[in-house]
Amino acid sequence: MGEVSNELMYELLKQMHADMAIMKFDISGLKTETSNIRGTLASMHMDIHQIYTRLDRVDLRLEKIERSLNSGNLPSAARILSSLKPDWFR
Image (cartoon, rainbow, N blue to C red; front, side, top):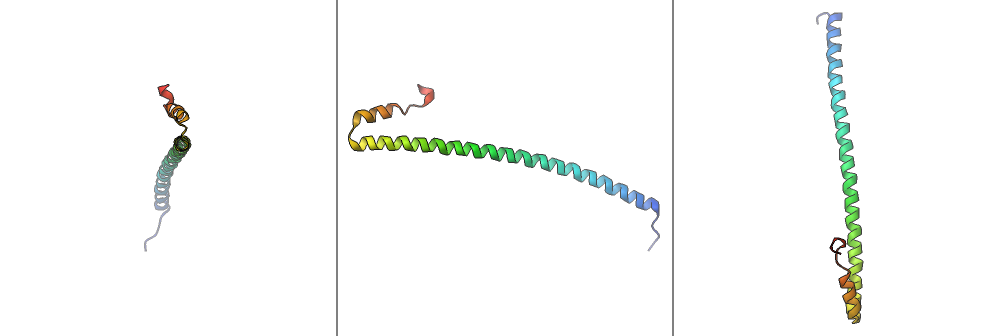
């Protein structure tokens, strides 16, 4: 095996340093992307929660309508049905 000079070691260390700088840059980009994905997932989680909340309210209103229809109390059923208009329609 040949003798290793200081110049050769220095060149190898410089190349390793450059490669590590590239890796640091790539890792920084991955951290940013991961953070963005985490924010998107949190937003989607909140959207899904709001959808479930809205569905629960619709379910409760439907149960009220069914109870009114089953009890034969038609005037109150008509009142409940008229309250089902979306907020933007009023």
